[in-house]
Every structure is written in structure tokens, then in C-alpha cells.
Image 1 (tube, helix red, strand yellow):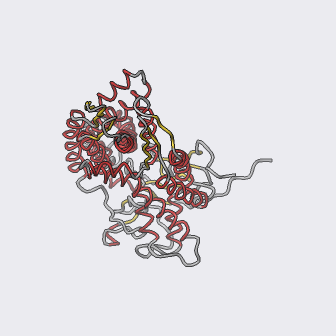
Image 2 (cartoon, helix red, strand yellow):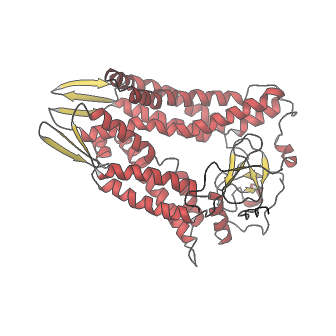
Image 3 (cartoon, one colour):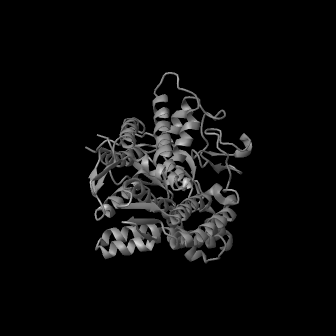
Length: 458
């Protein structure tokens, strides 16, 4: 006997690939499957056996752990008979005391406000969808919570805590508090919750509950229509001219391509390159021990770790604080160049797939550079022992944080579909489809089984 086919949990629907702009049909899929773009390999959808239930439980757990993280003791440090306890709230407060209030705002937003908004918004929507009469504005809150996910950096904070703990070993005696353990567990739960969620299933549920921006068609079209574009907010393919330029499902403004993507990206990359210089020249922190100050730059901190034979930690800091920002800037320059340089039809497809993967890497990796900022915030809050030993944050940290934020905005401003548009034009419309030719490219996307089982599934 042959095994029965797995039941389908989705309906076929049309999607525009956010990586290359190809319109294609995402076929009906069973649970725990993934659909990839047939041209560039970008993931279009990953299904789950329970697309919202597991995430609901994990998001509630995240809120509980988040409360412990911010209210409990982080670390207790002592030296020369002086004991100092601190929480994560102490870091931004110390930055404000030194006049670095923009840095304090960045740390507080990425470690407190953005994660809280993401958790609370997701919980509001998932609970609301289970109610007989759902609460108002589910679509708007879910849209905001997904956008806040870009700026919620608790997993980076965990790495910053580890680096700070290691660096403090030679200066003070350290005792780890319950907040550190809560942060470690919370990081695992966050990743688990994200893997357990199918955002498209949530948007479809919101649509079924009638909470859309405008009336939706009874049957979603499976063919490309002239003027159609994919919504960046919820993925719905629509003709924005028919809805006053808005997505009828989530209400986001819909464009065929991000407006002025190249100009905005060039401006942000230029700003990031300029800020990269003071970020590496000026001290990011100063260690004052027995009245003698020792300013330290990013590279100076790496050299100190090497001198202390902490080679893995030195490599980690060098990679996150020096190489990653440089990699992002150079990667964005390469992608901007790809929108204007010509290539042959034989090589364009391979190169564009590589550049599209580069874009996804650049968009993901930039947040990890904040590890240095979180480390300096923690060190400044922990080590305040008067004349014995004090660590003060420096102006270089402010410039470095600006580099990280500017490059994140630059990656969001860039539109990778422009690289494919340029290649289609330069190849004389032979190898790659243009916007007018997408009507013929609505074949089913490629299907693949997920590499692992959905968290929480049987």
C-alpha cells in the first residue's frame, strides 16, 4: 500500500518574488513545506502544521521572559569591597548621564521598545483571531509588529552580554543574575516562535475575518494583470491603481518598485562610509583605573583581547564591529553597480542569483554589529567604582551606532528587483523577462520540504 498524501493546508496564490520581481503561482502545499522562487531561490512561503497556535504560546512565554529580563538583576560586580548591582535599564541611563542620549535611545529602542512592540502586537493579533468578535485594526497592528522585528535585537544583546562578561574578568569580580538566564532562554524562544509562524496564514485569517483595508475579490486571480505589483507589507498581488495606490488587504502603499531606491541607497551608503571613519578613529570607551585613563578604539579593543589571548572573542569583535559594516557598505555598492552595468545573457542569471543572495545576507547580518554598542552600554553601567575603576562610553560609539543604523536603512531602501530589471534591459530582453513579459511567467514556484520539523509539531 502507498502512504496517503499529506493534506493540503494552503490554496494556490499568485506572488511577486521580492528578490527578483518574477510573478509566479505558489501552489497548494501541505504542512512543513517551503516554496522558493524558481528564478532566484528566494523563499516565498513556508507552511506550518499549526501556523498560529504554537507561535501564540511561544509569544506569551516571550513576554513573561521579557519582563524578567528587564526587572531582574543582570549582574553583580564588586571590587575593593564595593558591590554594584545593575539591570538592563542601567545601560541607557548611564549613556544619558554622559550626554550620549541618541545612543541611549538607540539601545532602549532595540532592546526594549521594539521587542515589546513585536511581542505585544503579535499576541494581540493571534489572540484576536481566535475571538468570536475580533478586536479592531488587526491588520495595522500585525503590520507594525512585523516591521518592529527588524529592530528587535535581543539575540544580539545576548552576544553583547557575553562579550562584556568576558572583558570584565580582569577588572572586577562578577556574579551573573537571573536576567542573563532569562535572556538566554528568551533568545531560543524568539527563534522558535519565528520558525513556528506562517505570516501569510495570519494575513489570510485576517482577510477571512473581514478586517481588510478594502473589499477583497471572492476568488484571488492566478494570472498577472497589467499594472499589478506585490505588496511589501502582506505579499498580496494587486493592481494599486484600482485601490488608490493602496493594498486592499493591509492598506500599505503599493509600488511596482521602491520609489527612488537607488538615490536613497546611494545617499545612505555615502553617509555610512563617512561615519565609518570617526567610528574607527575616536574612542568607543575609556577605562579609568586609579585615576589614569586609557581610551580605546574598536581596533584597540580587539588588540587588547589578542594581548589577553582571548583569540575567539577578538575574532568575534573584529568580525562584528569592523568587517560586517565594511562588508555591508561594499555589498551595497556592488548591488547599486549591478543596476547599471551590462552583462551577457549567459552569465546574467548566475550573477544575479549570487547578488540576490548577497542582498539577503546584507539585509540580515547588519544588526549583529550592534553587539559592540550593547557591550559598551553594559560596561558603562556595570563599572562605576569611582577612583578605583570606571568605564565611560566614548563618542566613537555614537558614530559607530549611526553606521549600523544607516546601513540597515540603506539595505531596506535598496530594491534587488532593479538588478534583474537592468539585466533584462542590457541583455536586449532575451534572457530575462521584463515587467511587460511577466504575464507568461506565472508557472508554479519550486517546492521543497523544510530542513527540519516545525517546532511544536507532532
